[in-house]
Image 1 (tube, one colour):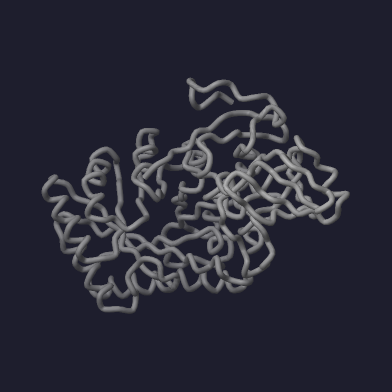
Image 2 (cartoon, helix red, strand yellow; image 1 turned 135 degrees about the horizontal axis):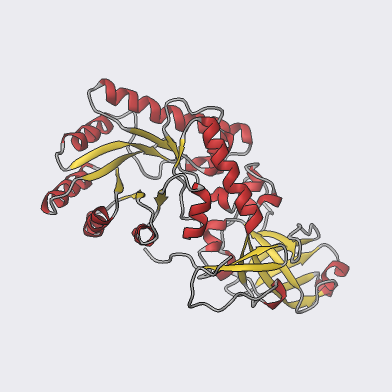
Length: 387
């Protein structure tokens, strides 16, 4: 596999040569995750517009799409520019746009074959229409709908939702391309059955609003839903056109605890080195702290003592049940061992791998990923950074 950045040095040949902490991407696991989600979207009869915020690399995005299209979802305008430069022609910016970001959005609308904004407020819709008129452009817009997460989006049961959709559709400078939602509250579910119920709610809320808008004479082009847990759990997607999962490429300890995947499917890990070994107090200290793993608390609603990731062997990434990542400071992780003997088995210099609680946040701690297959380092991938 060729290096993605000719200016970068060749990757070391094996894990033992890597400095730590280092972000690792397991290529076979990644490829399998991408294939499974593409097949699931096909079975559900929907288009896959994958979110790229988890990895922020062109290499992974191409695996997600498998050469079928160049349609992706981004969470920052920096990501939109990064992927536009690498040939991705159809980009959805799935964060509500603010008036201050409209000039940058207009520039992207000029560069891309298809660039779509998200909004949920009439003031922003008016500002977008005015900016598009000044630039002599027409902007594509998705209306964000709150399906129960109560983060962003219009209340689908309110008259304001219909009024905002009508405002966008009536503007000669805006094109209402559809409705978008994200069931972020699925992450709080205590069981797969409850995740499936939230997935059904995500679908029904958005499809019902689309139907109501069409009956009111407001054209709705597409219904777009998706999160990794809901797409993994949903039984059907009647009325939905596209899905936007993202975390599934790497998965993580949180997704495994929820049942979206098994730990053996987690494709992003952090390689770390033991810097302190204290068998008398059943403790190890590793060089992966909050700046390598983030301080995401993980699935505490399922396991209050889950810690900050799953500790695994370095060579085969198999979980080590006798070790528990109990706390993090900036550059250090404290690992509790079940017995003094278990702690003593990992002297200073020993290597471990951590499956993070939240791969999106952990991956964001690294400006380069080392791509591995077993113990072999195959390539270096450099993700986009910034906003």
